[in-house]
Length: 122
Image (cartoon, rainbow, N blue to C red; front, side):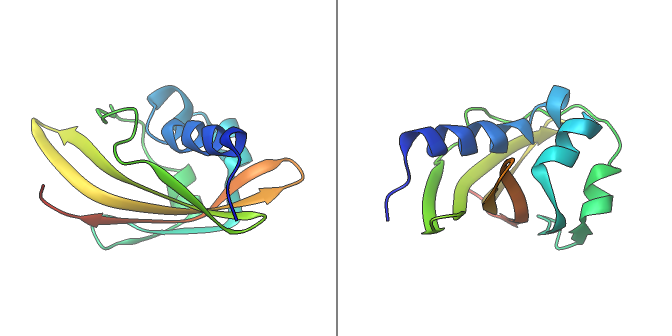
């Protein structure tokens, strides 16, 4: 099963929105794209629920965009797994992680159901 170029572009844009301050801290936008049952295994090992993600405090996000090694595969016609590497600078230190997200297609568009970040050193 092959993902359409349109869906790939949409998912890449949505994933990047999570790394852009203007959209990441837009409560209305995050409510639209983060599913009610969303949860995350953070890079730190901590588990985040939807309400934790929506309530996060605004801070500067210095992430490499476009997202390095971005790939998408369909798990079924309405479910996609996105993978990429992140490189984010915090206080002058670059933190790297392998990222994986599960997105579901709904009547109103794609929504984020799950995310995981695993640290690595290049």
